[in-house]
Image (tube, rainbow, N blue to C red; front, side, top):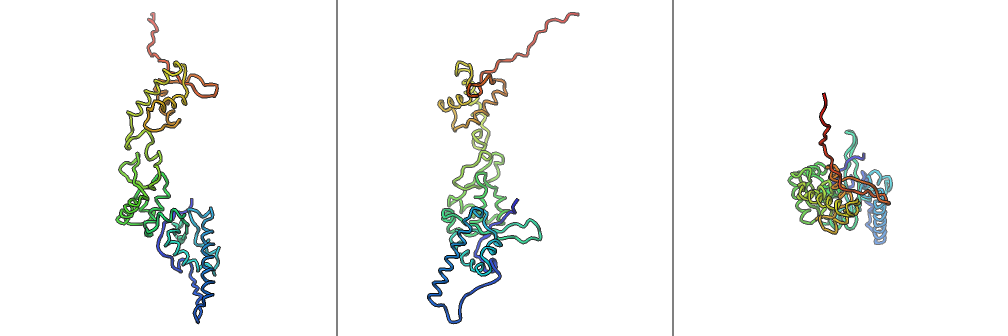
Length: 301
């Protein structure tokens, strides 16, 4: 498992990227041609840097600082400092620090490139706000607890509350709740739809299990089994199509979800599978009522 990394913000100093510095300034000043050459060299170096971070293996997780040094060498490596600072100022680059797997290990700095769309979203945010956004983004459609955001970023709760509010006002993130822990607040990206693990799927309404809704579905499915095809058997697809036609569900149910309701009827011995169609689909019929009363007659002495 790769080590966890904390996002860090702010300008990069030469000490972070290299212990060496290269001024390239002569005693007699810089000529126009030399300035142009230096500008062209810097632009070329930035293009190479961006292309490197755009490679598939470095998207999202980024590239380690040591890997940058190995790629660019001792001469070009220190010249990355102004390039990194400018890209971070433009919100096109993020910087994070790994959590050492061993107490004696030193944390490693990673750099990750952001898309133009992501950069536009984060433009104007400070380093801590960007850090929080990226942690929330990494949680996907499952969201992340506020406590976990604090532990991953190291930002105090008082500052974190202000950042959450600012990101909410910009419609970048939104608070959600989970059916498994309704008192805790999670955050996820504003445009995402929470997973069924969080919302409970169609069986929950306002984070409460909807017994009435499921009862209505059970009654409708039982009616389909008894009346469709003269009671000689109905397939799961036929039941699902009939539910759509009758508009009995407030949400679109998948075949798996319809089968879940059908299965509850089978568990209650109200529905059973009789046979299969020529296409191999199961046919369901109303279950035969089982009597538990038996008369063995009188036992003779």
